[in-house]
Length: 194
Image 1 (cartoon, rainbow, N blue to C red):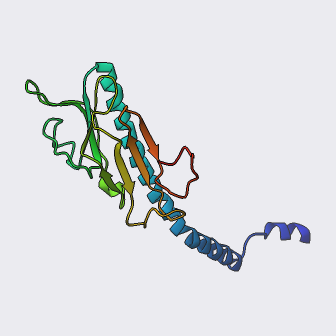
Image 2: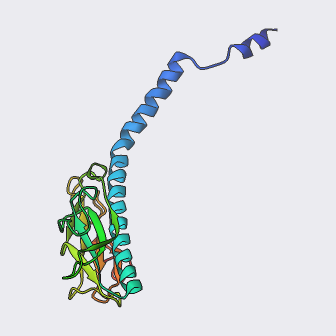
Image 3: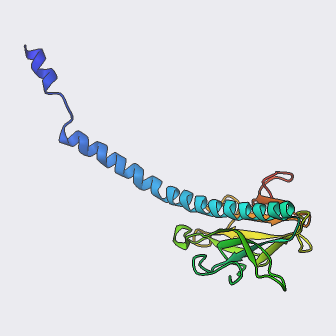
């Protein structure tokens, strides 16, 4: 009978629960800074993927339509502007893929993407120009290699082994588009390096 009572009274004491809760809080506090850095790097990577996808769409549409298609960066709200009234900006986080304007017609939209600036933290965009134009063969119209650099100065420099994983979206004259890392510590011939 005594053995039966003892099994009914098992459980955790207040002290045991307090110790377990304290250990969990300490572990969470130690992991919070690295988790915050992970989230910021994930946001930077998501914007890099968005810009890479937009450039690929522009090139694909140029080949499909056999005419010039423009990828345009902007900080203008896509809800209040149209493809022909957008203000181009080489630091833009939003983008349009559009048919360029001509003497006979305004710019015509194909696709656009808006990024909420609050979701990006301190991500900074710096492009070699506010727009990239691909011809009907898929080649870039700008001479030489151009691109977009993405950094997060709020987290720190893009130093090798540093807290920030920076990205570059590179457009070659032939129209090839690459998403690569400007990390100089990567070995020569590494496919991730720019």
